[in-house]
Length: 252
Image (cartoon, rainbow, N blue to C red; front, side, top):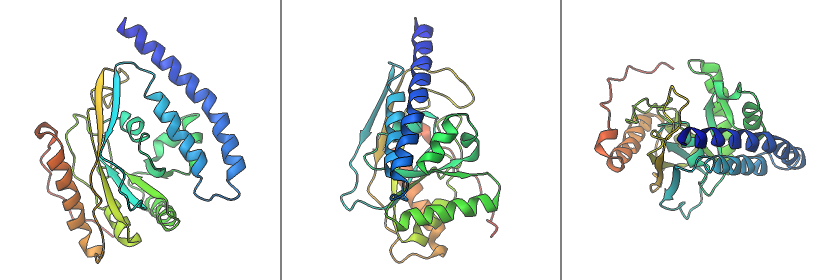
């Protein structure tokens, strides 16, 4: 019976994506001439993500905390346990443009939906690709649009918190915006990295208070990163902690 429920969930997800792309394309055509932030195509794709979270009945997703009253824009950062993190974060009450690994943009159908949304592809280990993504992210922030980044840079295989990279924090300092931490727990049980089998999960996204970058320079990026990661450590359960390895000096 569990396998039947899983197969029905995959079928429902396929139908949602199949029907969603034409609608999103229409929204893009209608709104693109006067909306550089692509708000409507973005909101629609997040709605698709919300619906995907309903395709498997044993999944449970919820938010804790509220969006800050100052509104943003923010550089939103979240830990990354599973592909279900994306489904969970689609429930956040504001549109965000995501910095996502290039591989997802190569997935048929889904990659086109990400492009129509205005999300940003980044190729790991490619400074030029990273620079282009940062430039686009900076432009979004200037226009009042939130930007979403996973500072670990990859999904954790065992749900433990990995070291944070500095990129998101450099961006926030450069743009003069606050960092909004969103602490995720519970998604790994629903869909683990390296597999295609789903399972029950009780997933939570906890919105923490924003952390200001006022008065900071690029020399403070490491300090800001460590302060934000400490907020994650204080919120996650002890079993989610991984010892941070010694970080080599960053080049450039």
